[in-house]
Structures are given as structure tokens and as C-alpha cells.
Image (cartoon, rainbow over all chains, first blue to last red; front, side, top):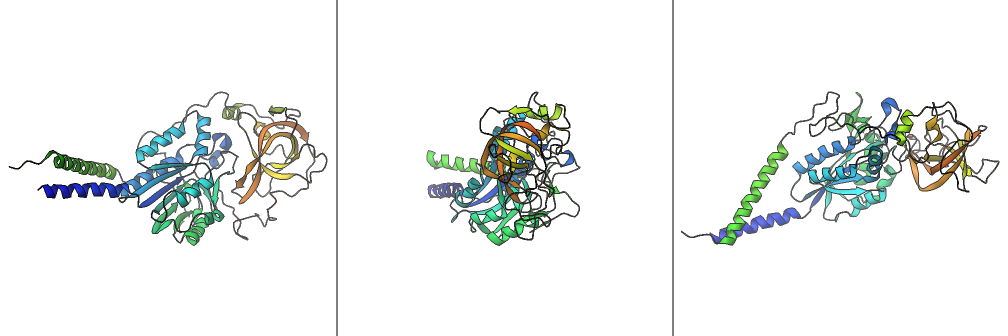
Length: 232
Length: 217
């Protein structure tokens, strides 16, 4: 009996040890909102009336990922911080504290980034990529067909000062993804060009939208246009 | 009857507790995984009420922008922000017919006369200190070909214009003074790298211009 209990204990402790060791990673990448100052008076094309449009969608995805995560899978949430700092100042709210709390609630590994270089550095070296491959990647934020725009109309009206262009993909190691990894950009137009560059560089498909996507109604973003579609 | 010694009993208890925790955690995670209904209204992810922004702060840059009266043209001699420095730049407002968001041309303040040394740039405003002169105008483009003294500095980073897939030099504005309306310039519009548009200019792939609006939401 004592031997049996000891074996059970070893099994339980062994399982706990194994689950603590990170063996794979899912990443949710979240861009920032525009300032209302920049978007004032633009009517129907005024962006980001709701400051957490990208965040709420990200949280839904994080919850999905956490519920589906296999033992040893780390769920990481990367957020472009300066845009939320600026929007906090504009609104008189501490959005950074709210984001930190949301990350805690989702049980995700929060990684702020301020620059493209910091983002790339985490993707390449944030974990030991020889052992910890990325199995899932989602992007929520502004985009056109050639770019993820982490900053948009926040520092400069209708422009970006921090972005990841298709030409920047070459700075990311091409072996960071696991075979069969699932990647999706929920932003506008990614399927029109970004997805092709992504597949070419990483040899992993990335689902992206043909046309615009809509974050304004809560939940997961949806295609805006009737002729829009998801593609790889 | 043989009793279990205290240590294994503790381990068994811990194991049971751990398993119970896993079961509870799984059942919580499995709840409410039906897709959200979307009838066009905003639905907060946790089912709560729609978000409400705090009231506009009186005296904030957004308050001024939204509520100050607008004028048809700039007022000659008007100053805004920090305008005491001895180093300033001359700026000429230009409009990009290709739809680019660059502000116009800028050159050093001591480069009087010719605008040949000027460069096309993106204007980074400093809300609360100095914002683009057109913010005071009824129409955004009403100050086309107007000239200003600009105080501020060039940023170390570039701006990306998603409409034309090109990068622009950034000038961070600390203050300005309205000089007056100038003559139209015959300089090339756009950053140095811009290909003469057929119809849209520089792109991520030659012959494949980026015309997509980046907007979401």
C-alpha cells in the first residue's frame, strides 16, 4: 500500500513538474487604438471610438487558447503599450492597469512592447525557440495589406510610427513556428498580401481578410463587406 | 487495520485537491463557449453593459478641438506653443493629390528664398502644446500654400503612410507662427523615395501599389 501511494505521489509530482515546463507557446499580438483627438470629425471612418476594441477581441481569443492549451503550452499576450499610455492620458483613465488586470484574469503571460525591435526580439528569443515553438498566433489591430500597424493615428494623424511591414518579416527567424501552427490576422486586408509573404517566409499559412474587418460590435471581429472573405 | 503514515496521507490529500481543482477549472472554462450573437450593437465580452467613455475633460486638447469656434483662414501673426527659440524652420503647407497624408515642405529658417532645400514631411502634433494650424480652420485644406515658422525638432523615427505604403520624415511640432499665404511651389510632392505615381507610388512590390485603407472598426 505504501509503495502504491509513493508511486501515486511520484506520478502527481512528476505531472506537476512537466506542466510547469514550457514546451510550446501561443501568442496573441494586440495593436493600439487611435486617439480621439486625431479621429475627431472623421464621421463614419473615425476609428477606435471604443478604446478596447482590439483588447476585448484579444481577451476572447486568449480565453479560447487557455481552455484549449495542452500541458506545457504558454499563452502569451503581447500588447503595444505606448498607444494605451497615450489614450489613457487622453481619457483620464489608467488603461495600463486595466490591461494588466485583464492579463491576470486570462492567466496569460503579458509582454508589453514599445518598438518593433522589442517585438521581433521576443518572437526570436523570448523563449528558447529550439525547444519552444509557436503553435498559435493571432493579430488584433490596424493593418493594411502590407503592414501590421501597432500604432495608427495615435502619434500622427492617419499615420503609424510603429509597424511591421512585410519587408520586416525577414528579421524574424523563419523557424519559430511549429509545423502545423495556426496563424490568423484579424485586421483589415491582411489576406490580400501579408498572408502570402507570411507563408513564403515561415512556411506556415496565415489566415487574413480580403477586405475590411469590423471590431466595433464586440466579440470576434467580422468581415465588414459582403464580398469579403478569409483566405490564406 | 494498518494506518497510513502522515506524509503519504498528505500527498494523497494534495493530489485529490489538485484533481478537484482541475475539474472545477475545466468546467468553468467550458461554460459559455457559444458564439456571440451580433445584432449590430456592441456586446461586451463578459456580457456586461456597453462601455461608456468618461466625459470630455474641460480644457483638454479634444475639448478645444470639438468646441472652439473655427475660422475660414489662419490669422497672420498668430502664435501657438513654444515660439521663443532662436532656431526655427519655415514650413509651406502642401496637399498631396495622391491621397498621402504628408503635411507639406519644411526647410531651415535661415534658408531664405529658394525652397530647393526643403523636404516633404509628416507633422507630429503635440496636443496640449501645439497642434496643426488647420485644426483651427473650418476646412482641413483651407491653409494650402500658407507659410509658417515652425519650432520643434526632427524625430529619429519615420512615419508610415498606409495609404501609399511609404515612409516620411517626421517633424515634432512645439510651436508655430503664421507668416501668411505664399505662392504655390513647383517642388515634387512626397518623400524622396516616391516613384512618380502611376497612380499611387511606392509600394511593397514594384508595380503593386498599396491602396488599401488601413482602417478597421
